[in-house]
Length: 271
Ligand code: SF4
Image 1 (cartoon, helix red, strand yellow):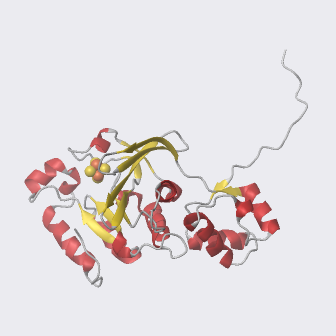
Image 2 (image 1 turned 120 degrees about the horizontal axis):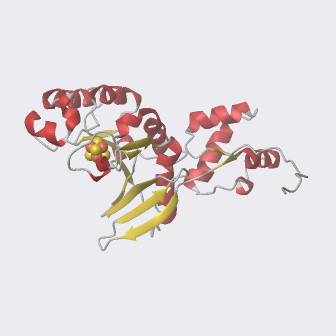
Image 3 (image 1 turned 90 degrees about the vertical axis):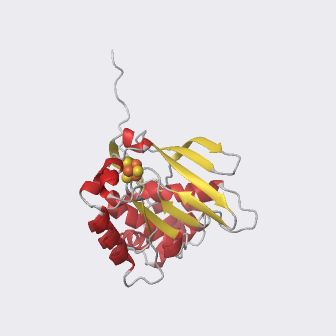
């Protein structure tokens, strides 16, 4: 026989993950709580620059605000399942997301800089013939929180000897085609460039694409970071086989789109 239910508590609303909120989104969140916009920059600095996720330790917020935030929001980053360091210092993390899916993030240290290769999707739909991710098929887009969470985690885990941030460059070149997850990738790249978060310049954030022409055009207006195009072949005959999206956006049109991308962006480059 089932025991009688004696204590019925109201179901707790899940905490809102704020880690992927850029300044604009955080300002809107604080405005909805009746708070001033500057709270957004205070919280951005705590989380993305100091690595403090616990609202109760954010001493420049009022006590009542800290209590309210603790009851309704949190900062959640992916969980590390595997952490592998190669002899050359390259570090590869396998990360588990909240729904159980996993993604990879790779840090490549070089003289004078450190590059983080960030994933944008679980799997990929574009089916390039040489690509291991393509064999998984497409599962889902990452949220902005899951994308920026990879950079936050890397900054947390990499020890800097000279007090500088270890990640100096980000390439959106991990799992997935970033331009097929346009809005979330833009939001995360905005946070990467935000002065109160990571402060990376446009030249230090690179988006790597297989060549989606309409989205490349939009990117040049919305968030003109550096662009890397994965060509893999000099002509349509071979590229159609290696990178099937080439059938829709052939090489000549892609070359023109690359030239167009840098028009009006003299300091920007396409590689
Ligand atoms: S676009 Fe990138 S991730 Fe997707 S199948 Fe091609 S190479 Fe792989």
